[in-house]
Amino acid sequence: MNLALIGYGSVGKAFARLLHKKQSQYPFRIVAIQTARHGAAYHPHGLPIDPPWGPPAPSIGEFLDKAQAEVVFEVTTLNPATGEPALSHIRAAFARGLHVVTANKGPIAHAYEDLRSEALRAGVQLRFESIVMDGAPVFNLVRETLPGVRILGFHGVLNSTTNIVLEAMEQGQSLEDGIRLAQKIGVAEADAAFDIDGWDAAAKTAALANVLMNARTNPLLVDTKGIRRLTPEKLAELKPKGKTIRLVSRAHQGKEALKMRVRAEVLDLTEPLALARGTSNLLRIETDLMGTLGILESDPGVEQTAYGLFSDLVDIARAI
Amino acid sequence: MNLALIGYGSVGKAFARLLHKKQSQYPFRIVAIQTARHGAAYHPHGLPIDPPWGPPAPSIGEFLDKAQAEVVFEVTTLNPATGEPALSHIRAAFARGLHVVTANKGPIAHAYEDLRSEALRAGVQLRFESIVMDGAPVFNLVRETLPGVRILGFHGVLNSTTNIVLEAMEQGQSLEDGIRLAQKIGVAEADAAFDIDGWDAAAKTAALANVLMNARTNPLLVDTKGIRRLTPEKLAELKPKGKTIRLVSRAHQGKEALKMRVRAEVLDLTEPLALARGTSNLLRIETDLMGTLGILESDPGVEQTAYGLFSDLVDIARAI
Image (cartoon, rainbow over all chains, first blue to last red; front, side):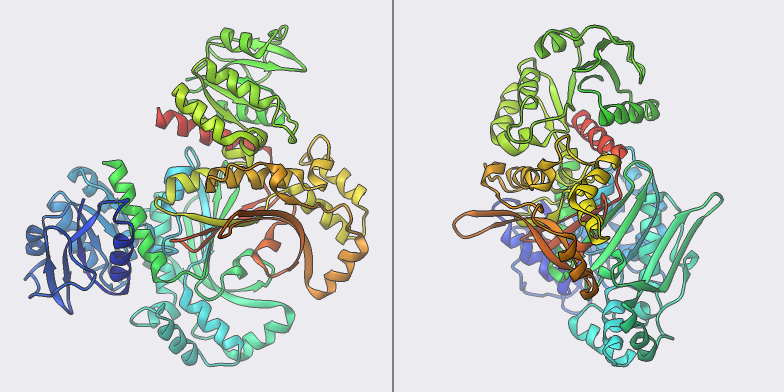
C-alpha cells in the first residue's frame, strides 16, 4: 500500500521509522512527502527515512496527483483555532478518492460531521486515533470494542504541557519556567498559549464529543478557562494537603444540551485524574452499559503518536 | 441469531435482560437454557427472562442437539483448579460446529492453546472477554485496536474480593468480616478461599498470558501467594504512611522464561494500582510500540459482566 505524507516533523519521521521496523510484516511504503521546510520527495518504490529533497509541489493538489498514493497522512502543524490548513489538505485527498489519516485535531474538532459525510460520499476512510492521547486507543476502542454502548459523557486530563507546567510550579518554579521545560521535552504546541489557555484541551474535548457523542460541536462551544492565573504559591499551599491541580476536560449529555468545559480543577492525589503526570494522560468514558471505563497512557513520546498513525493505517487496510 | 445458555445465575440473567433491552437493534434470541438447579427451557422463537422450566437434558450433548442454537454461552460456576465442567461444555459445542462465548476463566487459563486449535479445526469462534475485568475490553482491545504490537508483560489488580477484604481490614475488621462483606456484595467466588489464596488472580494471570503472550501456561505455574496471613494491624500501620496493600498479578517475558506471580504488594496510594478499590480493577499492559497502556474499570457489577458476553456475541456476529 502506497502512502503520501503532508508534513514531516518529529511525528512524521517517527512514523517512517516505525514503518521501516515493521516492513516485513506490513508491506506499507511512503512514496511521497511534501513539507513546507524541506520541499518534496518522491519514489514509487518507497523513500528512505532521510529522503533526498527536491522543490515542493506548488499545491497540495499537484503533490497528491504526482504522489500516486492510496492513503494520505496529514501531519502538519496546525492552527487549532480554525483547523486549517489540515482541513483543506484532507478535502484535497477526498477529492482524489484517497483515504486519510490525520494527526491534527483541528479538522475533527471543527468539522467532523461534514468530513464524515464527505468521506462516505467519496467512498474513502478517515482515521485520527492520534489526535487524543497519542496512539492509545480511544476512538478505535469505542468503535471496535464497545458495540451497542451509548457514551453519556467523559472526563479526562488530555493536555501534557499543562501537567508539566503545574508540576514545575508545584516545585516552586514559574509558569514561564514550566513552559520552557515543556518546550524542551517537545510536548508544547508551537505557541504554548494554545496549551496554557486551554485551547488544546478544548479542541480535544470537542473532537471527542463529535466522534463519541455525535455532538456536531466545536472548540468555541467548550466553556474554557486555562491555567494562566494559577501561581506557584497556590500549588504549594495544596501540596501538604495531598492535593494538586490538573486541567480537566469534561463533557456530559444533559437533558437539554451537551455541556462541555475545560477547567483547572483541584484534585486529591488519590483520585484517578491525578494519575495524569508529566506526559501521561487519562480519559474516563461514561457509558450506559459498561459503567465508567478509563484509559491510562503512561509517559508517551513521539513514538506513541506515530503508533497511532500506524494503527489507523492497519485499520484502513482491514476495512477496505 | 439463536443462542443457548449453559448456566443461568446472576450473570446469565443479566445477559438475558440486556438482550431484551437491545432487541430492536440486535436481533439475538435465547432459544434454550440448561441449568443444574432449575432444569431446562426451550423455545424456538426466544425465551422470556423468567422461562418456564422443564426437566434438564440428560447431558450437555443432548441439550445442544435439542437447542438448535448457533452460539453457546458457557456461564456455569466453575472449579478454577481444573477448568471443569466448562471445558467439556465448550468441547461439546465445538463438536457440533457451534460458536462459544464463555464467562469461565478456567478453560482459558488451563487449555487456551488446545481450545484455539480445536475452534479453528471446527471452523467456529471462541470468545471470553468477561473472564478478566468483566466487560471492560481487554482481549478485544489488544486484538482489535493494537495491531502489530507485541505484549512484553502486564501487571494489574484483578480480584475484587481481596480489594474488599483489604479495605475492610484497613477499617479494623477481620479477614472473615471482609469475606462476608464480599459475599454479600456478590463478588466472592462460591468458595472464597479461591479469592483469598490467590487462585482467582492466578487463573486470570495465566489466561492473560496465554492469550496476550502465547504463553501456553496454566495457573499452577503462577508463583502465587494470597492475603491470608495479612492482619488488620499491618494495614492500620500502613494507612498513616499513605500506603495500602493490593493483591497484584504480574507477568513479564524474561530473556529465558515468562515470569508470573501473584502477591500482596505494598502500594503508595498515589500509584495507579492503588486505584483498584472495591470492585474496581486496573490492568496495565506493557508493549513494545505503545508503551504502557492502562485500562481502569470503575465499580462494575453483574451488568458489566453481562456486557462482556454481549460484546463477544456482537464480535462473533461480525466475524462470521
